[in-house]
Image (cartoon, rainbow, N blue to C red; front, side, top):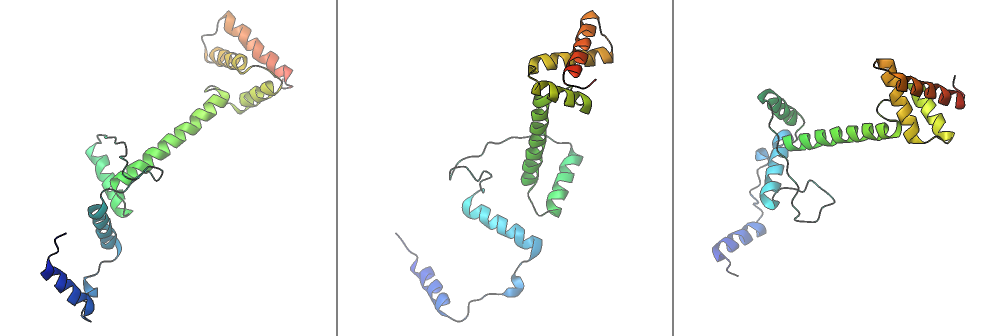
Length: 173
């Protein structure tokens, strides 16, 4: 290993002296300190991991999206106000969006997209408790909504009658 002796000696003299050359007035606070810290970390160690569960040195998947200029400027303004990066804001927004849609889909799988009416949902839950098959209930509910929204034919009328039979079965006239 080749050590620059002049530099080494200067650093040793500085470390052993009382004059540290520290200038508190040059210190940064608030937003400037946050930005400087991030820049220092970025330069020292590269990009920080966005996935705490990933192995050290793992590369995170990358997505790119084009935005209208006005939206891009709003993202930048929000990032500045919150002292965060635009990427961090977008990661959070995407995570919230996906979580919301996962919850909606889970709700849809539980009761079907058409079962939003609280009375129908309660009837479906009671029919399930009474041993009716989910597939049969979903078919009947879809037919009922089709009939109520128009376009009903004899088959739909028959299935609508089946809805009424199920309601009676579970004690909901």
